[in-house]
Image (tube, rainbow, N blue to C red):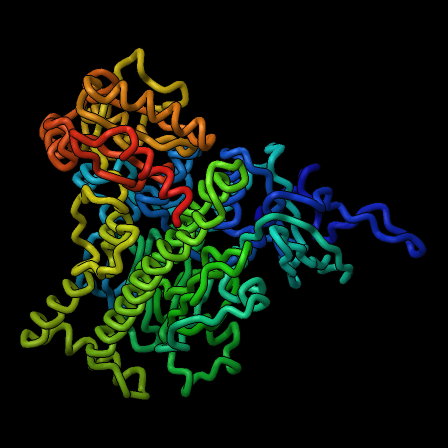
Length: 614
């Protein structure tokens, strides 16, 4: 959470008006709240924001008095941007944070930052063509900046109360109420809060998960890593070889540099030999030696912090116990190789938020919430496995360059240079670099996952639009009929794609994903004839049984396709041209593909069965 003072956000002590003889008056106002969110990281903050938009109040607590200084995740995936856009966050403003596209386009493989480049790959899909599959390109935003962005959006939100310096201790569940014991960290004082639901977004060492006794599936570790946060102006060093990631093959610092800001903040993640340099032996001096080797030339820099960690994967065996849920790193911990952890967490809360709201507002039964585990855990298992696969592949490659097992650094460097200049090995190196492409292009994992499916994608990079229940609604560029344009609609701004003309940019302002409101189900049809009456009957039936909304959109009457060839594929995929339709959930995932002859009761069954599964 951000460290800015505000009347609504308490200080680390969370205590005011205290004296030696008086009982502290806690700043926490809400002792009985619909939802308690534990953890003020990206998942917790976004959960609070989405619940507020859905009309559900929450209390968010964060145990740390201020955000950790070291950057963590550095990229928001296309899906994360789509989620933010759906809930009204300004994605154009978000893109002004972090690294501009032109600085982040490449992954460089180097002897050191000022040395020879032995290979290069694109960093994720930042080419213009990716916008045929998503309205929002990946963008490199440091996690602290994203947290601050969402935090700022919550500061004046009357539905959200936020406090720092308060930790979750334990909870008890009785009937439909969770009583949580919390602690003011500065004073040690404990107090209780009652809520209907608790969402544990409190990180990889989650106290919520620990208290629930939820075990994790996974391995303890594959490699020992050291993250070194440092500050340096690296533009004079990299020159034209800019990029988001710089993989360093020098034997003194095998690992990679994340260029959060080429003129300032950097992070080096080094795969070090824990036998040669045990964790307890690390000092700032050793960290400086490793960073200097990675840079390869003498420039001024400051080491800001260093911390060890283990390349491993863990996924909680249960995502909920009663009315207490786990999300984000509390539910799954991945290696950073692939950038999947943060984005998987944001998709977790996107899946859970509308379900929590539907239960609180009486539109759904509590059994709907069981689908959260069933839908999100398989995704985490796939993403965790891919992250470990990426890590093993890249560090194995770095070790094949003739430096493994050699204690003498100079001898190892000589072997490295011989390897990269050996004609017999150059083809192997080229293949190995190309073999890392899946590591740096995870589009299928970002937007291609299907709820209800445990199928592992054949390749993380190869996305294909899917027209089946559980899949995210495929993106196609659309233009709203002016009189039918939603009041909340804000045109997309893709002017950051410098290769495009003004005409190219103006043609891409709306997406089929914009048809899906976060607070309703959506029915999309080829034309209104034959569907309007069924839709109106559906509205009446749902109003009588639930308070859930459903909206109707029709091709040509409400919107047109900006590119007819894309629109044709969309219509064919759902059978719209032959009179079919598609029902979409509030989270933009397909609920049902409708046949021309499906009646009102068929649609009602799909919605009711989703909300109140038996």
